[in-house]
Length: 314
Length: 137
Image (cartoon, rainbow over all chains, first blue to last red; front, side, top):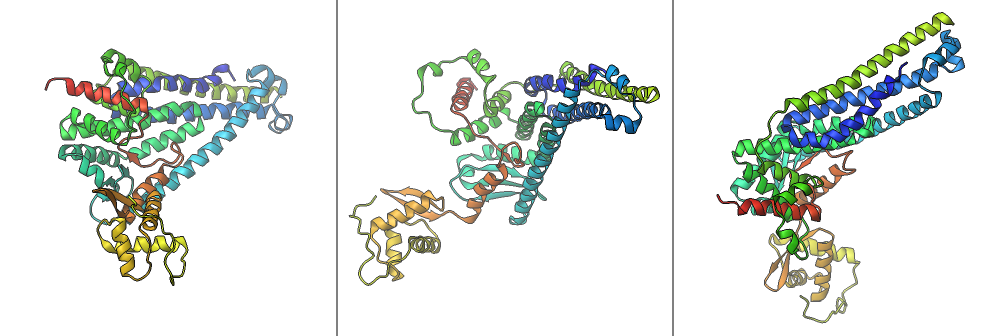
């Protein structure tokens, strides 16, 4: 088996580094599909690579070599994966299986709970207004899914702000965005190097819903200011506004946005012109995925050929 | 809020009740009222039920405790607060969000309109929106 087997384990590092810039530049719906598919493909390839390394280590164990009638010297010479790496791969594979099981369980439970609660709400309306002074607005997946909004938040917003809020939450339900984030986080459980990509999916589904709301209300600025207004309602008030911050220009802003949380980035994206499809970026991601996939397949073929050779030699 | 001296004793002849029972009585009075009540009004209604003769400050203590527990909402009416029970739906809304968000990455199936803001993000957001509003048009 060639050293290509390591490549599917390394490509997720590149994907993790590229995830946030991609999420910022690509059209959100496309970005969501692309990044989710990336997590699934790369998690599958890296798991396959681990399985191959484990298999090659197992094949060299005296017992299995005898059972399969393999020539052990041939296997040792032909396989660049050291026994130690094989054992590490076996451990990582086990850890990945456990992590995936844990995440599947947590997500399935949360989803079942969400469906149960959505079903227990009054029949009829999609929008459930809960009285009270809290600032709450979220989409609850279910059949039908619900949009839960607190009365206080509706009071604070004007008609257009309410329309923007409801359009955003409705887009989450209609687009089944929770499935994208669940799949991405499942893949990231199999390979934690992919966690930044899964987090990028969390962000792109928000952007997707924002752009839907902008399309429905016909006003990107309205959606931006509504997000900002609601976010600042829940934010801690500044103790004392600092004079130096008040005069920061757009240049200073663009620098600090790189480290900002999702809300300012969403608002900035809505205040900027609408995103366009970027074929170059798409091509780069496609090449990354294909490289990882091709190396996994190549490594598998190498191992197969080596085992066959070892069998004839033994 | 409390103008009177605390007189924690519930008066002669009245058997002492556990604090939980008092809280339940106050909740019951507020639920029956259907409108926000000041601690003074709560005290009057408790007296009218001939259940308790509580001091004003005791009532204030109880409603404050219930408010801290998240069971009562309050709004300012003049100098005092008026209290009303947080309805079950509202309680359910925040509990539901907390339950479904547990573990952030692992369990989040619901999508909030906005996630929490750090102090930095809040400043950045004010700049962004401030800039936006400064623009003509």
